Length: 158
Image (cartoon, rainbow, N blue to C red; front, side):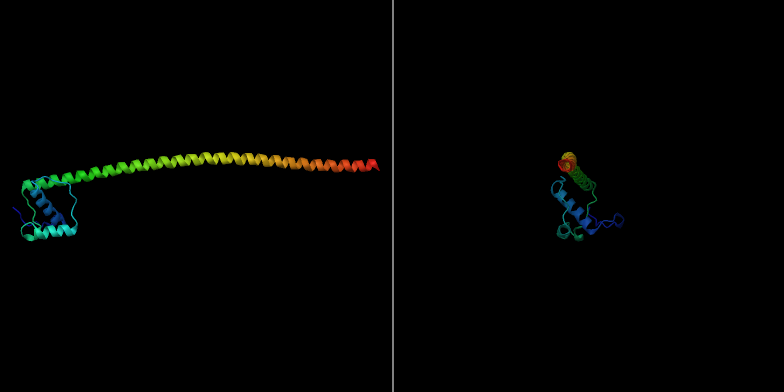
């Protein structure tokens, strides 16, 4: 029994109907063993619809319970394969994200250590600068004492 399937309440496009009909023909041709083949492109669906299915433009869908059960099992397997692939990709994404985060954290930690090291060097430079200012000030004081001593020597020597 292969009536032409045109129930508008299901909101199936001609491409969807062609794909379902093609999948049913494929399942019937493989002895009902569902495979996880990807959905054909719209041109493949159109070709399959126009080339096979015995009249009615190729979009005849079998409403036989065995054919529907095979189709249901096929789509269940396809959905499971998609779900498994999404889970695998999610796990890979999580792993890559965690690895990237770990590397970024390591770089950030190293940068923090380097910043602290540079701060310590700057602190030591400030200390040295203060010491040089003290030496300069002591030098000015010594020059002042020399000038006074020379002035006293000149007064005493006169």
